[in-house]
Image (tube, rainbow, N blue to C red):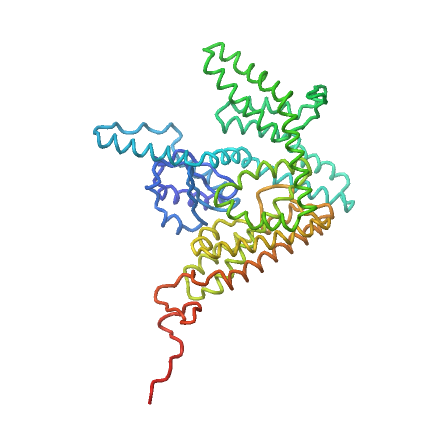
Length: 495
């Protein structure tokens, strides 16, 4: 397994321009994210054709290679070993005015691209705070589900409390991890971010009164921890810019914890608690009163949100709901977008019988799509064809409406962790009506998404948009193409 990861990493490096072209490497659940010096040095065609690469995504700040869950972590570790550990070499000296102008133009273009969408950049940085927490959320979510199942069945009573403790410990201290990651992401000292955020979950805050009410440990949750660590980072930077030498060592961490800690206790915890409470109340109300409509909108709009990068704003909401209610009711609805995508891809596979390259792409990407990794199907199938992307959204809307309609009838479906989707989400399902009902409703939503995505694409998704393979001719009635060397029946010549 490690040998395969090492070989794939070694094959990727020259295709992205070599080690000198890579500033940094990181990964999320499915993608290797690279900061590149010059994107023109990437051989994208060879990269997409490389076995193991499921797709390529380019956004404003990173070049992303889709490798799939599990694989991406091992490949990233091997990839980082191939990068020089020392600081990157200084750029070669500029010797001519032409070189200076070229380098200035390149830097200007890179800066313009990086700052063209500040909203997306901010969302990406917030998402980067939570993405490293996803493995722990998945592991603890599965353990929580197993512990709940054992408790309901009355099995292994001596082991159940231990499993519950293992599942709950991380969530009890998640504010500390959020604070640590926030400070690291925004340029502060990670341990100071964790120290400031730790006050959110410290039991002693129950003795503190803010806005005429006693605080409760955990009030504000991850939102309060995020705000506290962000404030702490700015306080730390302010102090470091003003205190020299020994004073910096003594006063900067002290003032960082003191100032941001007090503001957190007397302002941020209360405010974030109100926001978090409103988030949970709004989610419950929406599903209970407008479940079908909410599911239709969330399932139908999630793919466009992914394309715009706006889906990253949902990660703190998921985490807040898991922290508050034990599960997020949004994720199963959003997962229906992937079901619509799978149904649309299956319809394209059936319709384009003679497009060998497209069918090969679908065969390789469909298993990942069933497990909730949708990028290969998005960037390899539906977006290039155009209209199937819209019909995939229709399938996602139908699946979301199905799950939302059952939520209105008391069969709410939630996920105890974020990250997995598709069929991989089944072990993490939870709901007030029990795991069996949650699994049945979620499975019904997936089947609905598959069916509507398939039918919408088959009937409406390819008319006028289907790719015509080389050497193919189109049926004069507008049906799918057929190979030119196998023409259909022709009128008999006159005798």
